[in-house]
Amino acid sequence: MRYNLKQTFFILLLIFFTAGFNNVFSGDNGTYLQYALKVKDFDTTGYSISKGPDGEINIKNSVGNILKFHVNNKDEIRAYHCGIVYIYFEFANGWLARYKTLDKNGELKGDDEFEDLAIVEYEIRKMNLLHAKFEVLNEADGNIPMNDAKDEIVYSRAYNSKNKLTSENYISSKEYWNASNVLYKP
Image (cartoon, rainbow, N blue to C red; front, side, top):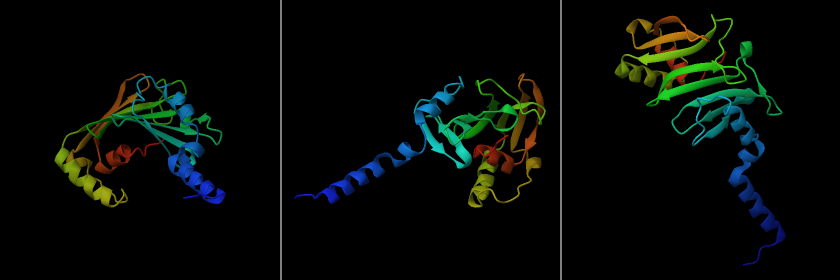
């Protein structure tokens, strides 16, 4: 079977697009990993990178933890609100255990407008009930109110950048769902 030049070009183009169009044209993964290495606790083993809206980068590692940060159109890192650059979401057994916010050097940095909020930890106290609530929230893509903090399903502790406890209380399943879906942004 002979291929003409047009067919050969088409086959090569098809291979090119199939093999990595997104990696070639969606930013430099090496640059993103260099940014991620500034966060000492974040392990990049088995990483995958996804790009969200407005230059947001999410790097997920092999244990399911996610590091989130923004880049500009030149793939240069840029800050969220109050000098926060990184948001590090840590999961345990598939459930969000805590998130923390960090500065450009990977050091703990609190949100100045929210009592220096830097770390939020979660403790699931009623797993069966949380499963049921998440089924409802997932079905509605989180677009329903759920004021169930009184049911004492998820307990939350907040810490400042000095690692001092600033508040603790029960939160709603929806608030936990939002955090678990990596929707928090300062």
